[in-house]
Image (cartoon, rainbow over all chains, first blue to last red; front, side, top):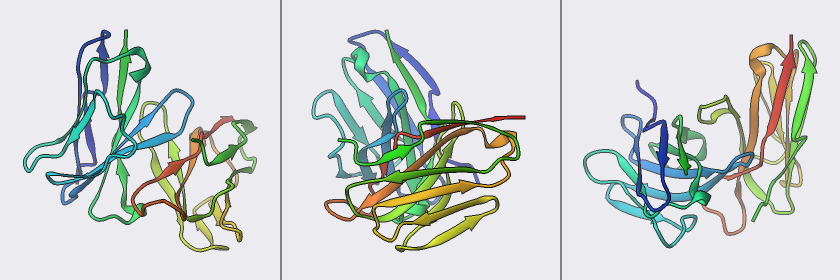
Amino acid sequence: NAGVMQNPRHLVRRRGQEARLRCSPMKGHSHVYWYRQLPEEGLKFMVYLQKENIIDESGMPKERFSAEFPKEGPSILRIQQVVRGDSAAYFCASSPGTALHEQYFGPGTRLTVT
Amino acid sequence: GQQLNQSPQSMFIQEGEDVSMNCTSSSIFNTWLWYKQDPGEGPVLLIALYKAGELTSNGRLTAQFGITRKDSFLNISASIPSDVGIYFCAGQLSSGGSNYKLTFGKGTLLTVNP
């Protein structure tokens, strides 16, 4: 059974460009979570989605950031007009339900904004 | 803001030694989780704790959920070189939290000298 997949693993963008991060959950998982990790920091919750629904986006900046989890295809975290402060590792996790111990993390996307 | 204090920030030990790290908070947690993160990878769940006072082992790892529900520790016995990595505590807050939202500590970087 393949784990949570994220791509790209590394992404370099210039200031003002858009970044699109993709996450394919584990087979059978319909819950997706995005976390951000700044250098030498722990992960911070951004958004929780179920298929076609955003359940909780309280950790996501109101501007420039958006997330979706369509009926078909991967979940997408989109950052418009990136700034240097967006440079971080972005992790996706998935679960079959909302039990904490069932959140499985992907390998992350390292975003660098130049 | 940061609600989990994890210590120590880093540790340098000799192979075979035991290791202890802990997390404390001024807030009450319902669940404590311990993760390990290898360079360039996502966090992998090591141990999950669900009840105050609970002591759980996973091989050479032992973790406890503090009686006050405000702290947890992780012990690694007889360390080996592959224990190298960053260890994170994470939990679900009792107040204002959701059963899917994890709050992470800043991590403990463990280096094991062979």
